[in-house]
Length: 270
Ligand SMILES: [Mn+2]
Image 1 (tube, rainbow, N blue to C red):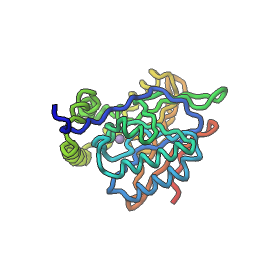
Image 2 (tube, protein in one colour; image 1 turned 120 degrees about the horizontal axis):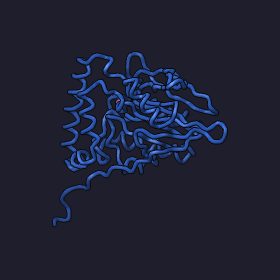
Image 3 (tube, rainbow, N blue to C red; image 1 turned 120 degrees about the vertical axis):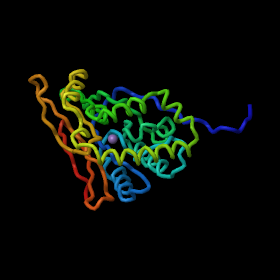
Image 4 (cartoon, rainbow, N blue to C red; image 1 turned 180 degrees about the vertical axis):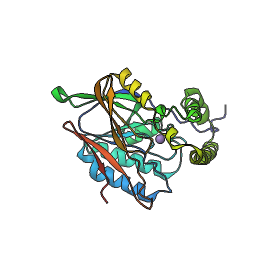
């Protein structure tokens, strides 16, 4: 067997399916890429100035616009991992969930960032003692069931065999495939009715019942809101995180802060 030949295949990371949080801040859908310098700068500022005030930073998917594998030589991934690692050394734990765009974030990235990868969905405990609550955490795309075409793609993209096969391809081939998929996705989105891009309310309610909780936090839809639900007579809440785009004509972004039982969505400071 030739000693040199093929570079090592990026490894998938182990996923935790529970998390104990005390004073977390939640973000999602930053869609970081080299093409979004202001969003990247805002994220680094957030990690340096806002996140250290919390005990946990929880990223609920689509931190990156795309992820071809942990062996990507694009410096952005390394810079983000270094920032997150620096945050953990200051005492804030980092939890990360895959989104639909960065679901190949793997073991090397998580190790470099000092991050714990969470399964989608995960039931987290918030606080302890009399104030303890449980909450369901998810990216949100699994509940967009009215988009049949997307659900079919999702099932394939999340299949471990498909992922292993994909990651075994050379980096350049993976990047070419992702470039084509992104172009097709942009074209498809424009043609789709907006309401099939949102979650199906009954799917979220079913997930809350299965998890036995009355609160859920997710992203993905880019429709930040607090929805009050009636779950078989019990009040429940669905928190939808804002996406970030500081490179847009009207910059946007924000985070959900949870402290002492108080939940609040904060826009990014201008
Ligand atoms: Mn998403």
